[in-house]
Image (cartoon, rainbow, N blue to C red; front, top):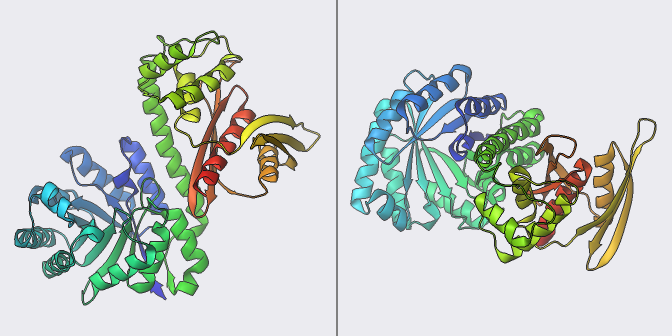
Length: 457
C-alpha cells in the first residue's frame, strides 16, 4: 500500500493570527498526525524564530517546514530558526511561469537555473531536508520546468512539489502533467492545487494514483481541503492503493476547531475596528436608505445599489424590533444580506413548538417562484427541527459541516448571529443570518447557504 504524506500549509495561508492562536493551530495539526506542518518564510526574525522553536517543542515526529526562496538571506533565516529542530525542512518556492520569473525574481533562462542551483545548494548545506516547490508550474514552459527540477535535485532537493496555483488544469490533465514533470527524477513528488474550480481534491487523488506521494493540504484558505481529502483516503484508500496516518476519528472535530480559531480572530479584529465608530452610528426604524448607506460607508463598506436595497430591507426588519441599531448590528446586517447570490428560496414564515415535555417541532414556509412551500418536522431541539423542515421543502438532505451562534449585542433586545456551513459536491457553502430571535437567525443562515448551493448548481 502506497504511503501518502500530508504536508499542511494552513499556517502559511492564515493572516493576522496571534502567537497563541498560531500555536493552537499547530497543536491541532499535530494532534491529527499530519506529516509536515508548513510555516511561511521568516519575516520578523525574532518573533518568527520563536514561533518555530515553540512549535517544535511539541511536534515530536512530524516535520517542520519553513519557507524561503526569494533571496539567500531568507535561506539563512530559515536555517537559523530550524537550528534546534529535530525534523526540519527548508522549502524553496520559485515561480516558474514567465510572469513570475520576470516580475518576482527578475530572472529567466540560464540565470534562473543557475540561481536555483545556488539557493538549493545553500539550503542543502544548512538542512538535511530540502523541498523545491515549482510555483505556477502549469503555466510555465516545459523546458523551464524540466531544467529547474533537474537543477534543484542536482543541488540537493529531496522533494519536488508541483503547484497548480492558477487552477489551470482539469484533474486528469494535471495528473498527467505531474507524471511527465517527475519522470526520471529521483525525489519524492508533492502536489499543491488551487481549489478555485472545486476540483483540487480530485486533482490530488488522480496525481496520487500516478506518482505523487506528498499532498499539500489546508484547513483555511485556497487549496486541497484536509478534511475532504482525509475522508477520501479513509473511504477509498484501499481502492486507490494508498493510505495516510491521519487520525480520521479526530479529523472533522479538529478541523472545525481550527476554523473557529480563525473566525474568532476575525470577530476580534472586526470588533476592534467597529468600536471606534460605535458611538457615531445609532440608527432607528425611521432612518432612510441614504442614512443607512452613509453608516455602512463609515464601517468601510462600498455597497452597490443592489446591495444597498438588500441591506436596507434587512435593516428595516431588524430595526422594527429594536429602539436603535448600532455599528455591530449594522455590520452583521451587511454580512448577512449584502454580496449574496440571487435568492432561489426566501423565508416566508416559521412556527416552532418546544418544551421540556414535548418533542421540538417546526413548521417552515419558504417562497420559491412566488409560490409558498411548507415543511413540517420533528427534531432533536428547535433548530434541528427547523433545519429538517427546510430539508422537507427542498426534498434534499445536505450534510451540516458546522453551525455556530453568537450574540452580536447584549441585553434583552440583543441581535443574534448564526453561521451555517453545508457540504455539497465536495465543497463547503457558508451562510449567515441575523435576528433578535436566534432560531430565526439560524433558519436564515441555513437558507442563505442553500441559495449558494442552488446558484452554483
